Image (cartoon, rainbow, N blue to C red):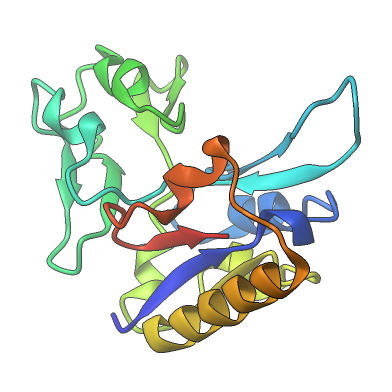
Amino acid sequence: MNKIMYLEFERCIGCRACQAACRECGDHDAKERNYVEYIDFTESRQTFPMMCMQCKDPACARVCPANAIQITEEGVVLSAMDEKCIGCRNCTFACPFGIPKFDFEENKMYKCDMCYDRSKYDIAPMCASVCPSEAIRFIDFEEMQSLRRRRTQMNLIEGKKPSENDKWKYVPEFFGVYSD
């Protein structure tokens, strides 16, 4: 896999096309594995896409006593394997982003796996393939670097500086998802 997910939160228009597409992905059992959240519902209707950050050292996999959460050779963190997941929910509590969800009917965890059946062949995950505002993109790493440089230059020209809350976006511990 030569591409990564790139998120630009402020481009999100709240259409939830990414969620609908996620439900339609072949191996997702008609469940959404990504979410659209409100930045602050009481203050604004601004939304942002939220999906698994594909951490290089995922807390969800570290705390799984059944070793049900696998990491592919490319570094994609997959949902819990049916035959191994014991339903302890350690993964849901360990994730700093609150991404893994627990299905009480199936008694297992599920989360975004970047549509691994597609992305392993450099085909965009369903959410990225339908996002009309390009808030979610599946692009080459070099293209992402170029976009980030251009964005930084524009922010410097406009006199903007990252806030304390924005610092997590620039830490390179995520494998497949980058955001600005």
